Image (cartoon, chains in turn cyan, red):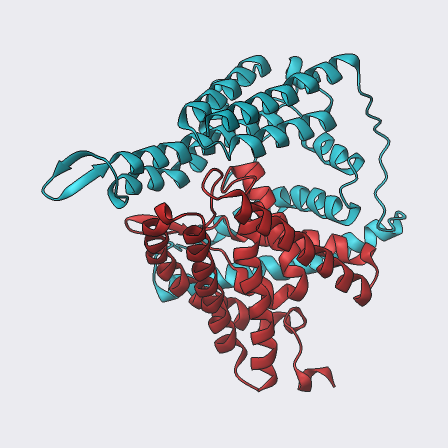
Length: 254
Length: 208
């Protein structure tokens, strides 16, 4: 279990780092939502290249991005592996009644390319801004306050509970516990989960009282002010223009 | 269990987001009725984080490794707030660990959140009838995964006939998770009933 250090490289300086966080969230969300519905594999591939270009501009180390992309890509790999065999269509290759279809390969690769594009863009969006700035800009984008606050506090408590879980885990291991897929082991894991919940329940009470005593009323207050510069408008216009070009070109093909 | 970006059609994605937003708005409304929102937010956040970390526990079942979903337990403990907790959990999964997709957060929350709500109802009903809490908890744990699997398969099939085979294949690992979650949830509920009974929904006798 590792800390989710998503904003490890947020201190670097680049065009994307300086981009206004609110404009960044809106434009990148638009990019993701338009790229994942691309039907044509060639356009999808160009959108992947485009995302890679933004990655180059953002100067985030490749190793970081590719390591982070792995789990997401492992999730979609089954599509690429299964679909060529499962779909009927033009047969590319056939051996002993097992055939690989062109359609299956096409859809499988399309899914993987779309997923890779979306993950890469998400990583660039989050990797170039400090997480608390991202949360504050969600707030200034008028996302309902209870929701943003819950998201922000949950994010912070994840680190606390990872620590808490690891200390319990260390003590379990010190007593000779090994995880196996049997009933005993699973019920011990159940007890650990129960313990995390009991601790979190007690912590929640303390957290609420300490927050209330500092004047927390459910409103979120922030002293950060965002201001859009000319460069921000320019970059936002370029990115939204790119989205439109992809959509119009995609439509002209179909 | 999570569906990644790039698989589903716009209609399914839109359905997921709309239903999720309605459920979350409704859950926060209900929470506001029970007490001030200032009190609910910190508690919900702490629980969401706790469940998030619990779902990072991996269990090795050769040749693969599965992680806990715990949506049944979440439903039992949080009630209507299980849906927003699950949604936020999935947002954080997608943003921090790149599990699942961004566009699919809505439909993924639907697939795990609705079973959680159903489990809450089942647990209340069951414990009201005087059944043993660990037993009914275990049933909820398994039932939640079963329903999630059914929803997941339906989602994949509606996404297009090319995904029919995938829909059949996802069922196999989920049967394994179902067994694991049944045992784990039963054990968590037994533990909570002993140590912190107020975390479980009260039945009629307890209310007196």
